[in-house]
Length: 336
Image 1: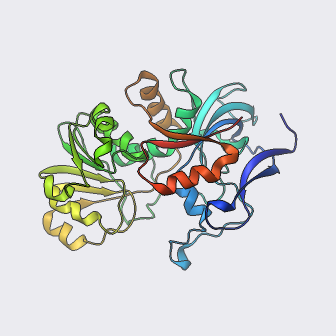
Image 2 (image 1 turned 90 degrees about the vertical axis):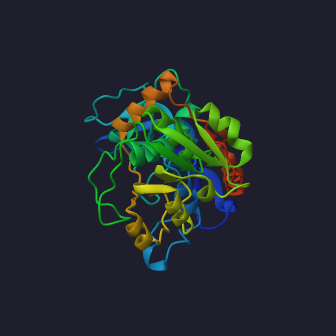
């Protein structure tokens, strides 16, 4: 193990993928409650490019302060290299995966050969899933889990005054918009696991993929707006969210629910008239929930699709792939 430096991707300025720089960086220092993970793979997620862009889509007064240089990324899979004295449950040599310190701004530092992670953010990686698929799972899996299955924490919700509450899914009709993406394809499978009838919305090229994952119905949004096709839905999980998410109100039963993953909903008055609950939350690191998801992955009940992989030095190319959109599952960086 190197004693003072490692290879990492760092930002010295904000901007397009060109600002991602592969270089030497200081080794992370272990704090109480943490383990040092030798990283084998890194999952990339939208917050990675939000950080890279300097959060420029947020109003200036809402942009977090980030000290440069900074290592982006939160999702890792690897092997425990060392553990603080107070850590229980993990030992040197254990295979682990997790979403590190999320939400935080520039503190997760996953695009690197080594990461120091709170033990509470990690779960054992079981033998039925390799490091690439394990690294792809945490943020997408925990987002789907905390929206649909169990919130799992009592932290204040930064996105709305009240806490988010998942709803029962057994026997219900659930529509997943953006169903082929990172969160969407996991949500389709978790909803099926919980006994829902699932309608998947994506482009036509994704139909066979989503039906293999268990989707009961498929809507090709390039041919028909889903709000014109789907009716009497109990729950819509809109993984795209944003200003257009209100269009799904017309698909819902009275008393139904709309869960946008991204902010932008602005039709509260109409939702109130229709008796629709609109709720969202911000995903948070949670090792025990990840362990539950890991058991589903190990058993093959849920699988993580890999869109593409890139070596860590090629993080720029991975971000360029993400920017082109229409991913089928997750993009992963591999670490030699």
